[in-house]
Length: 266
Image (cartoon, rainbow, N blue to C red; front, side):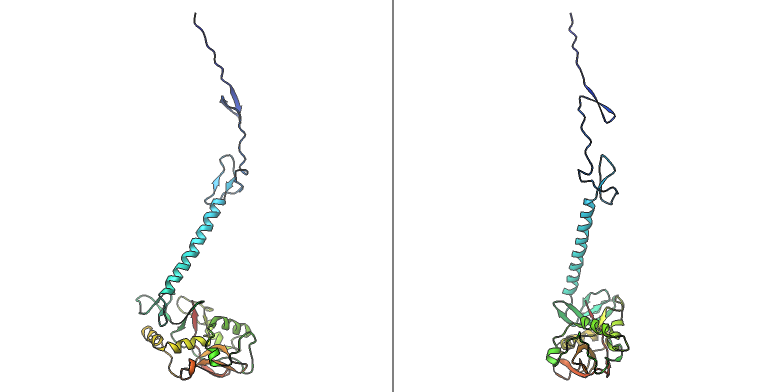
């Protein structure tokens, strides 16, 4: 006689689905698993158990991408500056070269290299202007009482900003003229009235800088070029370029009219 074996299989209803030999397991919580956003996001992950998204991954990717972009900018700037030396031609794409590069537009000549950045003088004077009003001292500007002290002032754009804040273009024509100057690759507000130390740097490096101006088709300073700086002497006098004197500087009454040669900090 044959024996008949009987087996039993347990069927369990889980979430509306019949499953064999299984115990019901609760559906995991999306929010407990880190899917906390109720809106989808680029690069985010969707919870398999509901309409929630984990956007942390997308945020991390965006954060890293931003960091990479900033690092690339710093590397590019460093590479550009490594090619810049005093006397280099500065082009409208903010690159430098000692020689003329076809297809690029020269906008200035590098005259100063410093720890906080480089500065280039415009290729030409943009006209003659009064500096300001005789007897009117700008309290926010440092008063340099000697040419040796003034020769150490390189804060062209900081000085210019203080002058601009002190009055309109009728009050301070020279600074405003430099402030409003623009070229290919730059716009109004990028250029500044040079600090006295920029002229001293030019004075100390005349051969290299004049060669740069010659190559770029610009106009170099002569021994007696008188161009305004943004460095104040006192309430009556301001420092300007004059390569016949020590440090390449002298000072004149601020209500006189002298050249303005803007400088670009980059």
